[in-house]
Amino acid sequence: MGFLRGITALSNLRSRLGQQTTQLGSLRWLQSQSASDLDLRSQLKDQIPEQQERLKKIKSEYGKVQLGNITVDMVLGGMRGITGLLWEPSLVDPEEGIRLRGLTLPECQKLLPAASPGGEPLAEGLLWLLVTGKVPSKEQAVALSKELQSRSAVPDHVYKGIDSLPVTAHPMTQFVTGVMALQVESEFQKAYEQGMPKSKLWEPAYEDCMNLIARVPAVAAYVYRRLYKDGRAIPADKSLDHAANFSHMLGFDDPKMLESVRLFLLVHSDHEGGNVSGHASHVVASALADPYRAYAAAMNGLAGPLHGLATQEALLWVKSIAKEFGEDVTTEKLKEVVWKTLNSGKVVPGFGHGVLRKTDPRFTCQRKFALKHIPDDPIFQLVLKLQEVVPPILTSLGKVKNPWPNVDILSGVPLNHFGLSEDRYYTVLFGVSRSLGVSAQLIWDRALGLPIERPKSVTLDWLEDYCKKSA
Ligand SMILES: CC(C)(COP(=O)(O)OP(=O)(O)OC[C@H]1O[C@@H](n2cnc3c(N)ncnc32)[C@H](O)[C@@H]1OP(=O)(O)O)[C@@H](O)C(=O)NCCC(=O)NCCS
Image (cartoon, rainbow, N blue to C red):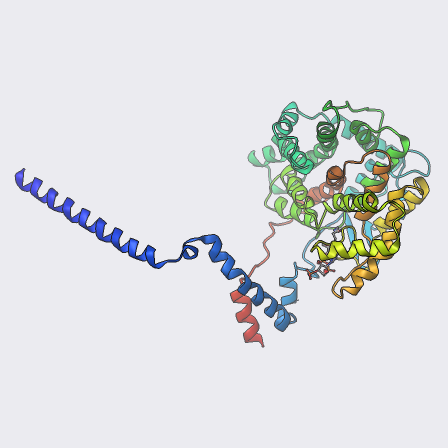
């Protein structure tokens, strides 16, 4: 026993001595380090300028180097120009703009069933077109309207989920929270867990997509009433079509407002698959995540200011100009404002596009609507002036590929005219519209059994090495 105690005491002493030596060592090492050596953020801050320069150099020296069928420019330029996605509901031509299942927007306005003769298309008819590629009869659109109504009940926990957020949360945050709460009822998730074969998954995808389209207007309207009105939800009116009922639940029943909402849903419904929201939904669903999760991903992308939030930004910007300089602002003053925006490091919202190289036909379509219904609206008049003033300035920067107006500079104007003046809410309206296009594709994703997305990525080291070898 005594011997054992002796051994233990010796080993304890050795370990204490060892610890002290290690501590002394670490202390010396610590003393030799500067504060920034030990701070991750500072390390990063030191590295960033060097890596930025490296990226620029690779772009300028090797941008045209081929990597298989693509170039280094494409890898570093947000995958611009790479055809890499299948997306059925719509196609964007750089010169002509959007076609929904082969139809231009004016053709959709002419051919799709409307609520009243010569009026804007019913969202139900549009959805039928996006899903099937065929123009429906009025009866088919009405039948779909009934189907959506029968699916429209929103479970109470969705509203409770939204209520748990502070009212200061951005409307898109509240909306996406509501969408994720709807996910609890996903038929797709249940079917997958029960082992449904892949070839049949389009059926629960259809169920989820239709339920989602039917329910998001009530969720969106709840967010609006909670934030800007008395907080009481307005019950659905089953005599109304999808778009008109959405407007009604928001609290707007003027027939011209209903037409504005129908047009809004048409022009924002889809814009092929490579835009941030479309692509986000597609990649998430490719992992066989259910349509709610895919749509929520799309909505989080839509909330970015370079994408859907531009609707909010554009309306805020135009209204701030009207407020500061009056609606009769001179062209010279407008030029100054545009330069001030650019010089502050911001983009001019509502102008430019990643794919389009002409004026966005969605802008043209809304311009026509505004000329017909609200020609004297001061904000509309201001947008018309900006349409003249902005493009030459953007062109003079020498780098903007498309200086022309896009959908967002005008999309809030008619709704604003009829009383929906809360700019921060506009991306939610956009999101409700996108439920149509995104869902149409999500059904086809599963119907065609499209595989999980997995493009190849490379590191800067790899790219630099490759370019040097190729050169
Ligand atoms: C839509 C948008 C993101 C497309 O970006 P893109 O594909 O990179 O466009 P380009 O290739 O023409 O961009 C080249 C340069 O011009 C700039 N540019 C493009 N549009 C611009 C605008 N409206 N205002 C200021 N600068 C703009 C880009 O920021 C980029 O600058 P950088 O090289 O210093 O980064 C861009 O036009 C934009 O930010 N527009 C304003 C926001 C908007 O309206 N978004 C909704 C689109 S539907």
